[in-house]
Length: 86
Ligand SMILES: [Zn+2]
Image (cartoon, rainbow, N blue to C red; front, side, top):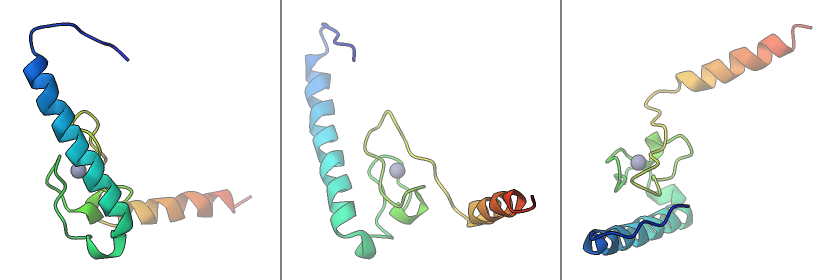
């Protein structure tokens, strides 16, 4: 963690407020998981269901991977099938 002292404290307050909103959105996303699949994420504007873990991004600095198709499921299946070959 880095703490910088500078003249942009106003910006820091904005950022804290936004982070609080994102944390709340993330919390609500878990509570109402089955009902918010089509809610847009506050960070990247993608629907919750398109995020890799089905939950919205929790920070502007760390966006989650967006999954638009189910191709990755197929990929996982292929990987485990290969494991069973031996
Ligand atoms: Zn997002």
